[in-house]
Image 1 (spheres, rainbow, N blue to C red):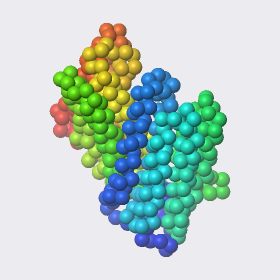
Image 2: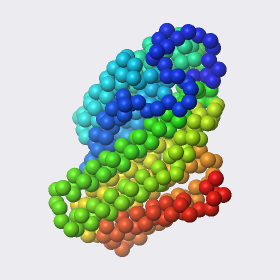
Image 3: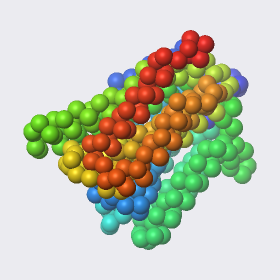
Image 4: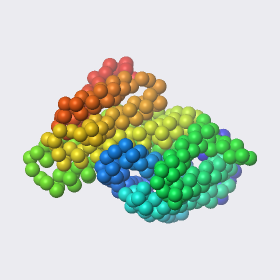
Length: 397
C-alpha cells in the first residue's frame, strides 16, 4: 500500500512499475491469469451442489473467501507492477499454477485434502508478497506497504495450514478466524509494531484498472454459470430441458445486465476520479462487496443446475434457496456497490431483495415447481432492469 505523497526515490527496477498516468489497461497476461478461476468457480459451484445444507454453504463461503483473497490481492499487486514485463509475467504464471492446485483441492478441502489447499494458499499469499517486495525496491512508499502486509499474510496463512492439519470443526473455526483477521488487517491498514500502518486514504492506486479487473471476474463467474447449464443440457436434450435452459440462460443475462448495462462503465469512471478516496472506495467496493456478488452468481448457478435436472419437480427448501437466494445475494451485493460509489439508496435493488426473500417461504409452502421459482427470480431481476431503464433523467444523473 502506498502513501499519496511518495518521497523522491529512484526505483531499483523502474521497468517493472506501472506508469501512474491515466487508466491502465488490463493486459493479456492478467486475462490469461484469470482463466484458472473459471475452473475455480466451477469447483465451488459443484461443491455447493454436492453439499446442499447449511454446513456445506458455510464451507463454500470459507473457500470462496480464501480464493478471493488470492485473486484480489494479486489484482492489487498488478495495479502497481507491469504484468507484461518478464519477471512479473513469470510471477503471474507461477500464481496460475498454484491457483490451479488450490482449485483442484476444493472438493476434498474438508475431507482430507485441506492440507494441499492450505499449503497452496500459503505459497500464493506469501510468495506473491515477497516477489512484490523485491520488485519495488527503491520505492519506500511501496516497500513500506508490502512490509506491513507480509506479517499479516504469513499469520493468516499459517492459521489456514494449522486448521487443515487439525481438521473437523477446528479447521472451520481457524479458517473463519483467518478470514476475519484478514478483513480486520485490511480495514485498519495492516498495522505492524514499529512500522505503523497504511490507511486506505493514503493508498495510491489506479481505480479504473481495479474496476476493470473486478468486472472481468464477474464475467468469469457468469461464464461459468452458462458453462454449467450448457453441460447439463448436453446430457439430456429434449424440449423440457431446452425450456429450462432458456430460463436459466435468461437469468444469467439478467444478472449481467444489472451489473454491466449502466453501473460498470459509470463505476470505473467514479473510481478513476476518486483521488485520495480511491483506496477506501476500492477496499469497500472490490475487496468486500464483489465477493458477495460472486457468491450470488455461484448460488444461482447451483440453482440453474437443479432447474435443468428437475424443472417440473416441486421445489425443495434447498432448490428455493438456490433459485431465489442466489439472485437476492447478487442484488444485495450490487446494492451495496452502488451505495458506496454513488452515496445513494438503491431502492429498486433493496425492494427486489426483500421481495425475493418473501417469496422463499411461499415457494416452499406451495410446493411450486423449480421452474416457477426460477421464473419468479427472473421476473424480479428484470423489474430491477426496467426500473433502471425508465427512471427519470435527474435520478440517472
